[in-house]
Image (tube, rainbow, N blue to C red; front, side, top):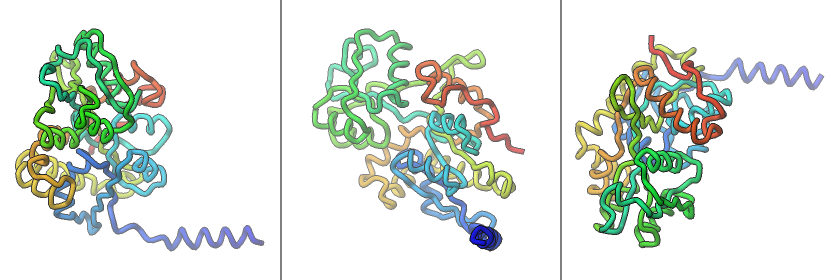
Length: 314
């Protein structure tokens, strides 16, 4: 009898469950959240639903919300997106909005170009994570010799403080912390961006598809007609950052993403925000993921995802 009442209760809850009146987008602190600044300042309503930007500090938090079906859209590192896809999480990559935010910084005047990195110790956060693997590839790709990679610091903030206080001389730092360091200490300078290029279609192209904009498959099934409008609003926000950087920097300070206008203004071009539909850069995405597959297959879930991971607009 108790099982009967349980079934009645489940039916009652599911039958009376109201559709959400919000469109929930999860984004990480840093360039991913920055790319939404226009939508944050001017909240969007699409098909009568308010677009809510949920910002978290850790990609694991975004991942957890995705797996609990609490997000309609999300931005995650492309490597993590591939890993989740290979584990059966139900989504597609709809666009690539951030194209590389990792920089080799130094606080020593004798280290000016990547050739000066020979026989140096470079500190990086997250052994086996994106910065580490791309640094290893960078060293190999540029035939650098005698490079020692130091993993003493576990996070971007800790490593940044170590560079600021001269505990390390060279470090891989991500935006927007790189810009904050540049404004705090004039001895700190960019040696090079961690470039990520491959030979595609008879030319060298940037394949640094660092982050992916994801859409839940159930959202595609239930509200597919609104996806174009959401993508258009997000694309406008990304374009706004490039077209009106001073106003975008002002909004970053207004909404407390950064406290200093100069740091915000320096950060925007270094964030490399550029909205591109995933279907248009499928080759670049797969070549980028192949780097991680070659260095550490487990980082993307043991295999390259098939092309069904890419959202194909109608």
